[in-house]
Image 1 (cartoon, rainbow, N blue to C red):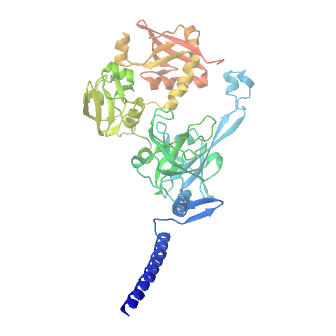
Image 2 (image 1 turned 180 degrees about the vertical axis):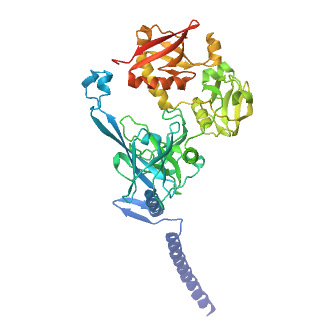
Image 3 (image 1 turned 45 degrees about the vertical axis):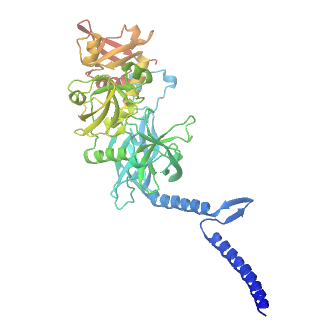
Length: 495
């Protein structure tokens, strides 16, 4: 009898073991289906989609939509207008001043468009300087359809930032984020009015930071993005996923005139600094170091004996009694750092200096010989009329190319090198053969001290005098020669 009971219990053990395994398998299946270790797979059009990945994408999409909805009301459409005289004469055959100034010459309205964004509820709006430059009338249109005439509070051609004001209150606004904290690969949203298509949203990432030497503006420390930017986007905000403005869209790299995946935005920290000064003073105070600089190249580094340094700005001249001179900076010093930020080239150092408020003490990392020194410098204010915008230089360069000569600002160091007693003005550095300048017997080394009635003590004065030539078609130069002085007249007619 005891043997039968043993056999009976053996059968029950087997049955219990089977039931236990079945229960364990069922529980494991349920756990895996519900746990984060195994995502449910869904077949869609023959493709397998990971539900977790899909949920992440849906949440990101919702975030973009939410940010666009919140930010769009603070983005504005800017229309500009100015009246210009049309040239009634084909091919410019008639250039007589009588006809050019005749009151019945036909005129037409030249219109432009761009973007901007509201930074205070009482109507202050930020945009690019090039959007509203030379505009005689500026109109701002809001997302809700309201339009307002806008007043230009101030503009800064060097950074390409402008500040407008409309007469309105309780407006939606955008706040600035810290552009120093952005990271390459971070998601961003661009909002603007490309080709007049108002409040267009595009999404991309930050492709690169601290782009300089591009030739867009004088202050260059751009954010590069692949968020689609086209003509009309200029002045619009570049927003991070926190809804903060971390840049202002300003330019594109394009071979076709349209989007090619490379756009540039001015960092918010630069925009904010400029806007604060424009709002309080109507202008921007610029920093001044008092050095002439150029890029450090491998060959130059070798000649200077600089080791283990491949990027930086080489000092080629120090202005006497300037902040740089007082701090002990010298020719052939290589500046590789500015207040903790690396300096890659001369353009980057120039940008850092220009956006630094006068009176600020900064620390420069300077390579001198085989050692790196930290030198403290109190940034000063530039001499009056010393800073030129890129737009001014380009305008003057066009005229000089037609006249056939080039110039450089005369400094005490340059005058000494050329053996000149004159230390103020501009000196002719090149004359193109068979050009108007060549036919007028201008030669390198001649000093120009007057242009079209404007006394010239620096390059800015020279450019101011050249601007008059655009209307008169004549350039009258005052030139110092052999201890004397003479006038030379050059004509732009027929050019």
